[in-house]
Length: 133
Image 1: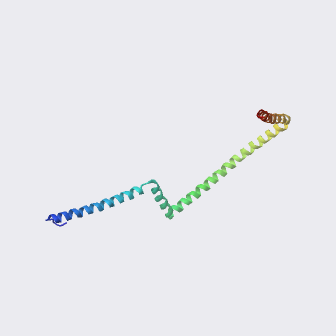
Image 2: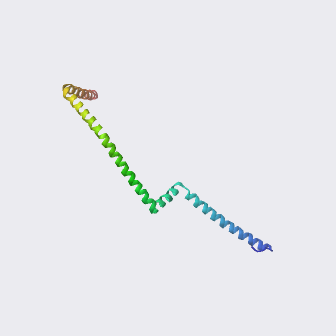
Image 3: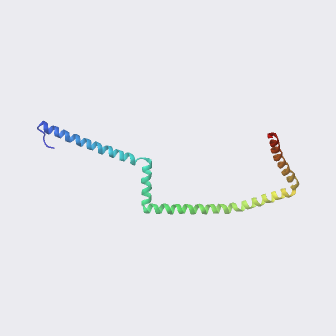
């Protein structure tokens, strides 16, 4: 800056500095708003997502990791099914045998129980129908 010797030069310098200050204030507000927007959660998430998608090494690494995890999970579930399969088969056959034996030995009792339940259901309904008329 040069030396100011007159009041006109002083006023011109002050006006120039005020304009510069207003411009800097406006730029600072815009920069603050841009920074504030960039730190919002959704914008941070967008940035990370874009970086992941556009980065070829990271994307291929993630894909291979996901494929390995799925294969490991499928392998573990198959092993678990095979180990439990024999136990389930034994339990199922025991239950089927027990239920069939129960039905065969007590068929008359089960028939009477079924008839009793049906009578109770329809008699209750018939009583309601007669009460409404």
